Amino acid sequence: MNKLETALRDISEMDRLAVKGSPVHGLSPLAKLLVTVAYIIVTVSFSKYQLGGLLIMIIYPLVMFSVSGISIGTCLYKLRIVLPLVVFVGLFNPIFDKAPMFRIGGVVVSSGVVSMITLMLKGVFCLMASFLLIATTPMDSICAALRKLHVPSMLVTLLLLTYRYIGVLTQEAAVMSDAYALRAPGQKGIHISAWGSFTGQLLLRSMDRAEDLYASMQIRGYHGEFPYAKSSPFGAKDAVFTIVCIGVFVLLRFVDVATLVGNLFVR
Image (cartoon, rainbow, N blue to C red; front, top):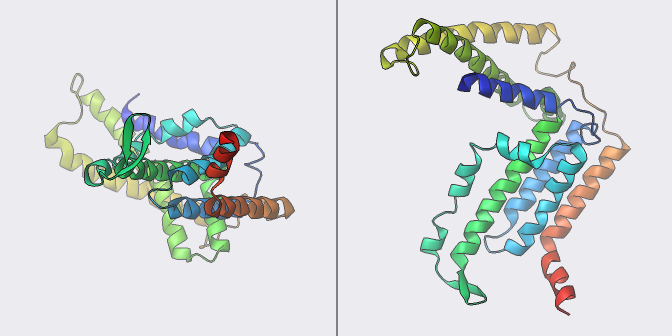
């Protein structure tokens, strides 16, 4: 199995995760979307030195992973390519911000180190929340929820077709890569002389497949809306879930829970 087939398998696995039967999967896509957006907004609103308050925000992903039946290891594996980029964001903060902030034993921790860890955790937490949304909700249902929030139909269509086109493009590239390998046994990768024709053929083949895909969507009733999307109605449990989660996020943002808990143990 080549790398393209592995990527295609990962995409298919995400679709399988989204149709499991946990309590989180049964929630309305609109509720999960609102909570995810609220979580990301609250998480990124912490200042770069509020590491203690930010750490408490890990509660939401941990609880959701536990209830949904999806392991954190699966999340980290799926995000293995993106996570290093997120970690790299604050890597140079200790170099430019060397002012001492506090001391642990005999080690002085600079504010640059604190801001670096804070920025990294913000990115990781936001990625985990986004992964939870995608892993527990089909993309069609997410797009339907976006339309309920009156996001422009053109933007929602672009999001849906981009998601679908990634799979189509990857599948066509995998088929062409296997065909090339059969015609050039023993050769590692695609020779540079074939890159132009390979890319052109890939574009033409994937465009044909994409047109067929869009036609099938229209046959199923897609005209900028999502009448075929499996979506649970926004009921009382969804309203409770949304209000409680957003309320907890706001509480954790404006109340220094870490300090309060620490004071209890210090006393």
